[in-house]
Length: 138
Image 1 (tube, rainbow, N blue to C red):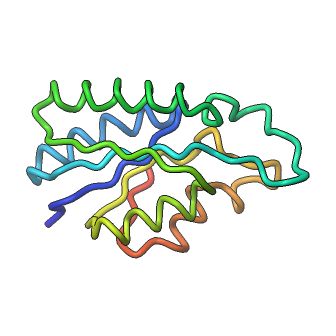
Image 2 (tube, rainbow, N blue to C red):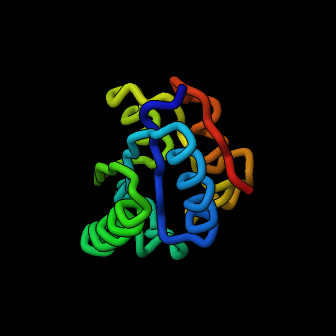
């Protein structure tokens, strides 16, 4: 049913909590896992966002992906990692479409929760733009 799962991660507690669900679903359906992290690029004229500085560093994102891949591989899950630059919600949906994933699993709030609130969160945007089902883990 879910042959390929996309798990977008950042360095948030919510992403770490969602990892438990990813392990459960991936093992249940013997799924391949694509772990994605997006390096956020500041828009021209926009001041850097204080709460996502870790996700603005390609080195930190690369280390995060390596650690995640190691953890899932130890669980016996076939994993692939992808690092992209861009706007997280759009990039997540683009990768889901390109990789033809069957399910996206992500935390309900990550480092991308905006000042406008939940309606503008990455998770909410992904739900509205995704080409496949999305499982949001509280």
